[in-house]
Image 1 (cartoon, helix red, strand yellow):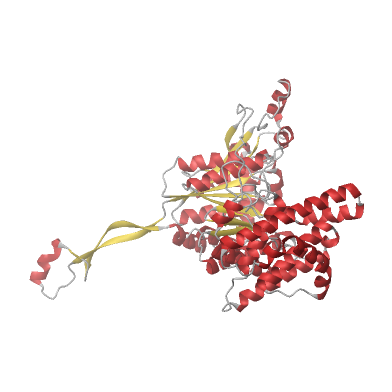
Image 2: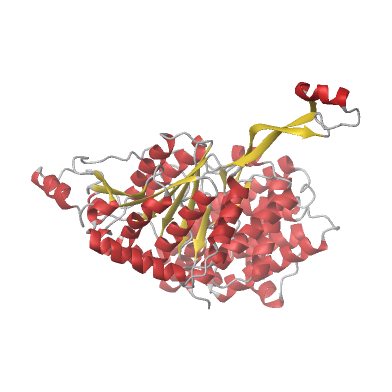
Length: 575
């Protein structure tokens, strides 16, 4: 098994390929697929069918291709407005209905797409075998749901279950047909008519819900420990699907995240701060002794010299990415273009003279401001030398490309709350105090300072004792406000961090996910406002749960030109 950073990188690449396949097959261009979550037109699209959730650690690339083809067919052939209108409220009933609708659209794949047909069959067979191997059919609930899935797949998609599966589902299949056989038999006939299909699917889903409730009551009365344990495993296997967002469409608000939807909303969430009295903003160099700062800069230069980074090449590519044409005077004595009245006399003196025109000259100009916001929490110490190199080289290349840049950091003033925690305790420890630590925002390089003058200050990133805890949401607000205060045609904010927000005092005295919810709230606000392009670089971590545009960096290897190529591809994705 590959080490975690490489596995996460592979997962990210597979999901990017899935998104490309989805766009190509469905014709829907505004599709994003990251972290197992599907977004269409910037709205969460629930994926509840059990065979559409491959395991990132064990499933191979062909499994993801099957998932991509299945989701593309769902986008192409299913009226999601109708689904949202009739979607059942009960979790299992909703799961069954979604499974039947998913298999309906998979049955509509054209014969002219044999590769897609093979991918769909292979994925469903793979999921079926994994479900059997995990022992989820040993209980009544797991066996019932598995039987229904196999029956529906065989009927709608023409699948062929193996001998082991056929023997396993024979008895429960007859029992299920006794409850809804008439409606089930009509599914294939009306699969091209979603409205008619929906009526039968809803009836089947309601019957399955009743059966499982009846099985639950019987299990409670009989108190069969073995069966109860098997049913518990089956429920855990479907947990991702049973805990999906309750509004059916996964509508995302500016609040927190609903269960099963890390990017979703919770309108009841309100972020609050106990006190801002001790919050401060520092010039990072002022916190380091001058002689120490010189030593850190020399250390950074030695490491930079050994990296072999091609900064001029990076600057050239950044210029092509960020620059736009801008009028820059006139080019005279041209053979075509606009007539230059000042040169008409030359035509009389020398009739053969034809260079009497002028062109409006345009030159590339980078009216762009890029802010690098670096997490200065304790866990980043292990990576900070590579990150300092990245920030230093990137800032220098941006300046060569004609763009402005700033390098910022965020941490807390104390560990475990510090003065604010003491004040809170002195006031009798009121419930839900909100953020309970003092912020420390650091400026390593501001937008007005040239890179050459800021070189010593950037080395302050290597001062390890400045790193404490991290409150990401408020840091994003601070960095975005700095960007909006400056004139620029294009504003880019790049966050570099290695995990979720963490402040022990705040997390121990409030709801556990207060900082996570606030970060998702802030990123959503920035992305929806559209005034700032927001990107995230995760150090050995996939940050797609928090940021729409993110990249996982593997800094365990040498920081080379390939790393910057990946970052440029991320920035270019907006086009």
